Amino acid sequence: MKRADIGLDKRAFNFVGVEGSLNYYVRPHLYFRPHLEFGNITDRQLREYLSWPTVTKVGLAVGADF
Image (cartoon, rainbow, N blue to C red; front, side, top):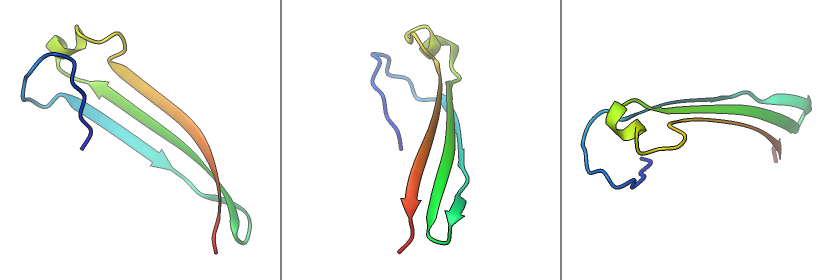
């Protein structure tokens, strides 16, 4: 569970997030994994406290299987 303290104590359905990734093998044991994360604060009152109520992250991981 992710938690952030922005100064407002309110219980509700406040956050929606989606993330995904896909392994692309370039050799039998070596892969690249592009990934994408998207998060959004849904509550209007909480959004007023934040400079960026929507967050998008994109990344690339390189890995090896042993």
